[in-house]
Image (tube, rainbow, N blue to C red):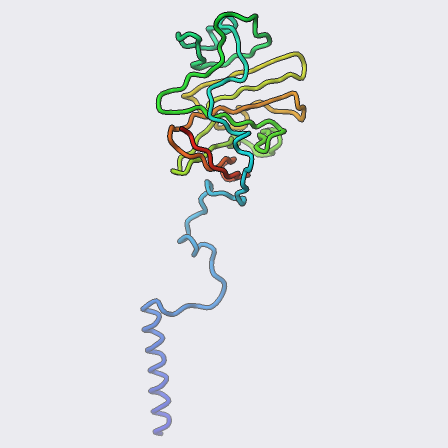
Length: 233
């Protein structure tokens, strides 16, 4: 009888201990951890890289801080209904889109630069197929709807979308397309020209980047992240 009483007391003590540990949050259940426990049930952040970053060793050859167009044209070649030029001499491209099939003859003033808004710099990125940052064609994806375009990122957490491009197509004759809209970022891959495997096509993206930052990476919103360090004076 005494033994039964002692066993009952022990069982009651163990049960009380279990209840106390559960209430204090010290009792851990066995089994597999639910993936939602890692972030309190919140979905994964889609802006975070989904592929491991890869260093871009020759970044200085592909990414440049410059307003130079890489070609020049006479002010008389510009269509006023398509392209706005500054009143400075020589003029600079303020905004617009135009396709050039001929660049006219040499004149005293040639348009060779883009106009930079205050407190920003123009950063150019070579995304031709021969580049390590070759632009993925929108037609190469089966996704419906908008397809996120490329972005530059800085060390402060800012990201930048292209505000234009220079597309040179020398496959047949000579055709240069200039698009520069500082106030209208390009966010969809379908907004960019499709570059074929021909080495006669060159595509350079134009970004508007804050002065004084350090650019640290380039990506397609988490895909194909390439890392580097380029100061923007």
